[in-house]
Length: 315
Image (cartoon, rainbow, N blue to C red):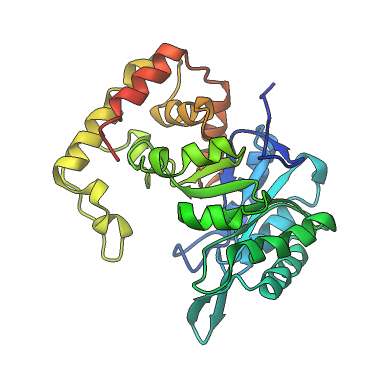
């Protein structure tokens, strides 16, 4: 049975592997999404030992939350951890950010309605705005926590100073930010403070847009127009080649566990003491089922350190 973890100082207990759901109803993020495949992906997660579903208002402007609400109807809600996020105001096609206490309270209420549930396990302030004192924003969420509408408070994409301001009264349970084997700045910038204050960490983009799955070779890539990877430095020149070489060096470990490279990479995050939950995304249920197998990959300390060292030079 998968060992579960607590989120910060909250009562939320969940699996160390979750499902990122930006491709579940995230029509504004991905073209030609199949909504039924999204629903089936959520069910595949729940059927294969994954409890945490990570969504956000901005994933389809509420559509991801709606589809998750549909997908979980026949499941035991107490065995599901729902994390969602808010901060965006969309008007006339333009996006602005708000951490205003009343806006955040309204966002939670609207998310509850779309998800068809009476509580949210983790609610994140998705992005910081420019003006709202962060401790006041968190205090508003704490009111909802005391009322039982949310169980844990998170912030996402906050600088360390903003995290400290948000946590002025010790009410932040979890931080979500970019972190992967090839994007490691959080190790110095965030992890020491989070450790010291018992704040959990959830990384997004853990597979670096597929770069850490082992599906790329050193051959030059030709991306379609509009593909965000075309602008990503990780996919360019000598850095791309160095990352690809490091990924390919994991093959013996993968073979040792009868696993894929992606499963070994996810197992590394699961074993990482600074990572609470890793949340790879998926567009198809088959991907979810494959990712779920990483829960059964138990890396030795030697293997963990070997993987860590292979990627130490990236930041």
